[in-house]
Image 1 (cartoon, each protein chain N blue to C red):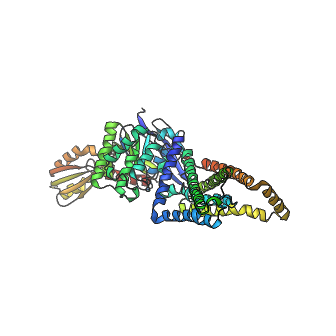
Image 2 (cartoon, helix red, strand yellow):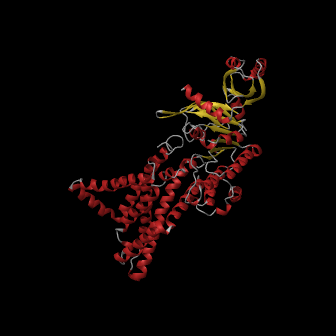
Image 3 (cartoon, chains in turn brown, green):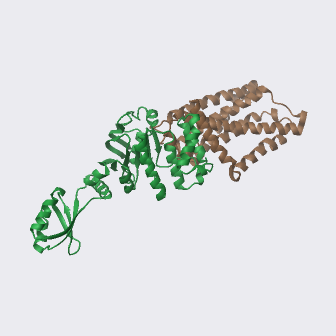
Length: 245
Length: 314
């Protein structure tokens, strides 16, 4: 199983690298994004960039967005490019195919985030020297956990959407709607909760602190991701649904 | 190894309101090239999917070397290579990367993987282009690479859906020779679909004809030709007086007669075994026969006849 997973991950990464190494298309966009997030934003935020609370929100969000572009292509792309049937005619197990695509997408998210975080750290150290605040190891691992769990969650959702659509474009459109609903729902729930509940929630958040909230977010995102990926694995079965959806 | 590479027993496959396979039953012996012919939409690709375990039959049963793909798809697929309706190559990857991926997917040992990939790329004349992205290739080159992929893991059964589509005549001929050698020298069973009847007749030991999901005919190309409902006789003769001509319709073994000029006659035979009797009758009527030539039905005639008869049965 591990070998089969690696076979799929390797193939996915070769395709991702091809897509973004073509400077006429995605390559320039990626470089611009890296410059913006890794150089421009840290310089704007200043010496405290590494320890700002907002980092624990926008990195997982950004990573999830990047992961979604990859995972929308996972099955819908294979179907659109007429490679799915041939792939299913090999010995690769259904699980290896799907999980390999999930892992490839999550690794892409990690690579994106860690590259930008690394460049950002170097930027602030070069610019601000000893004045630059350092991220503690606990916060660093928390950030890794948030990036991973948000990527997994998005990968699970994107996979389910990709299984249902015939083209990548449809998958991206449908995923966009789900993503919007998923991000707006919690805010909506808070907004309609009433003043008393909102106040209680605010107190609870203040008591938890950044680390506490981060851990809760990791746990909830991971649990949801496991559920979504489980459903995707159940749906993606040769001979029953995979080719006929 | 089972004497049969493929067995189909009363296979039915329905898609909502469409019956794609309608009580298909036939066997394919191991080690031959078997042609599966039929018009577009007849059910050829659907049957291949069923045999690979990619689609389940609604009812009925199939076997690939004794394994039911519906119960154990992995065991069935392990014995198969496939070039399906689309070539299934990753166009963002190079030829080398494509074959390497599929070699890993088929769990070829690392020690032999590279050598096998190189062997196939060289055999199909693609080695010099191995680092090119497949998306930049011509259709014919992609087809060759896809065929190379289908035999990468040396399967005992290979499904080829129109393998010579897009190939030039030289490449087609070379591929036909390769496929024939696969069967005769390596004992590989080749199950191919094609619209090229001449190719099927030349290459296939046995042929199945499918129309609208139903099996219309099964046998060797020679058998199918012989089974064609009518055979014809060409006669060059003189002395065909009017009364002889009018009696010809009821002569031994004749169903119909038509003139192709003064001395040329085409006779549709109801009973080909009575040709000697017919000739004797003609001579007895004073006809001077210069040439008698049996018109053999072509494979195309046999195929079209089978398709038409299947249509009539509907």
